[in-house]
Each structure stands twice: as C-alpha cells, then as structure tokens.
Image (cartoon, rainbow, N blue to C red; front, side, top):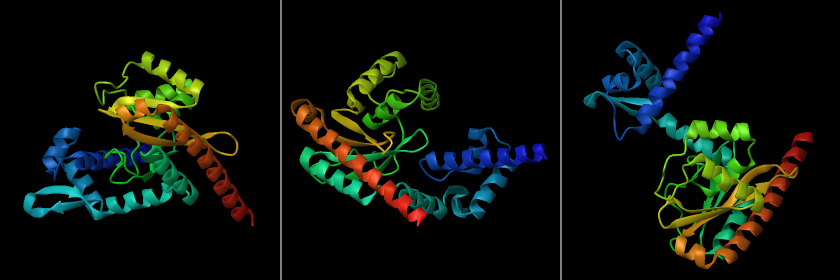
Length: 266
C-alpha cells in the first residue's frame, strides 16, 4: 500500500518537473529534450507528457513534434490571482501611496513563507518594475518586502527559506553573503522598515513597511519602487508615506478579517 502511494507521489513529482521544464523553456520542447534534461527514460517522458496533454496543461504541436504550455496553465494563473487578490480597501491604500510617494506602489501578501505580489498601483510616469507583477514571489533576499518577511521568520524557518531559494546575485549590488544579509535583517527588525538599493534592479530602489493583522502578526507589506536618485533625495518623505500606508493597510486587513469572521458565524 505504502509502496503504491509512494509511486503515485513520484509520478506527480515527475509530472510537475516536466511542466516546470516546459514552462521555463523559451519555446516548444521536444520529448527527447525533456527526457535528457530531467534524466527520465523516453517512455516515461512520453507517458508524463501525454498525461499533461490530456489534462490541458500542455499541448502537443504535431508539426513541430514538440510540446508547449496549455490553456489550463492560464486558468490556474487567473485562479491564483483571484485567490491572492488584495482587499478593496488595501487597493485604495496602495493608490494613495502611489499618488503621495510619486512611485509605483505594491501590496505583497505572506503566503506559506513566500511574499507574493497581490496588487500593484502604477502609472506611465511611475511604472512598476516590470517583473514585479501580480503573482511574483521570487528572490526574497533581494526585494524590500522579501527582506521584511525574512526578518520576521524564526531563525530555522529563515534558513530553510534561504536554503530553498538561495541568495543569487540579481544585480551587482545584491547582498549574497548570508552573514551580511543577517546583519541587514537585524536592522530591518530594529527599524520596522526594509530598504533595498539597486539590489533587485540597477538604478532602482524599493522600500517596504510591514502590514500586521489584528493580533499583530506579520501578514504582508506595503512597498514602493522608484529611481535610486529619488529615493536618496526624498527618503524621509517617501518613508512617511510608506509607513502610514502600512498602518492603513493593517487596519484594512483587520477589518476584512473581522467581516469574514462575522459572515462565517452568522
């Protein structure tokens, strides 16, 4: 019984690896290339590909003899966006932060030891960092809201996250040494504010303040991104806006939770 269960889990894990590989490719991928890249036999690879095609997660492009992502992946992405969507009042807070800070504003939510961008407020004059769209959750060591999360985690949990994500150099300024990162995170805990300068994208900086629920638990962050020159020139004005935005977002999150609880108990 346990052996059969383990086999099923292994099949699922292999299927997810195949899906990830096709998703990360620059275009359609041939079965033999998937087999070689993942160290799977060709029959096993075809079985996994066929299963994913049947489920709509991949499509088989017969003329190219290759595989590409299917419509179900887009369905999942849209479902994720619905599930992580920020409360309406938090979105309004982000709009105020955007307007007052003259910078792209973000709300990132804590979800299973990951900070996921749940809302972005931008305009042509103050655009977001392109990669920081809704659903982004990578490189916590190099983003301001990621540093906030790392600073709040228990040491063992923080190391587990860093072991999983690593600390790669996203730019030349990224803090990659864990000892230096830990020192930076200690400062974040002391000030209640996270700042990264050119660590995620050259000539751009980010600032983030924590959003807490009614019990005082860290649940997200209000953040902004702006040119590094402006960050240095307007640091204190921007900080005031971000901190106040985080306070307002905390109130909104607490109210939303209270409303949900009230609905659930009625």
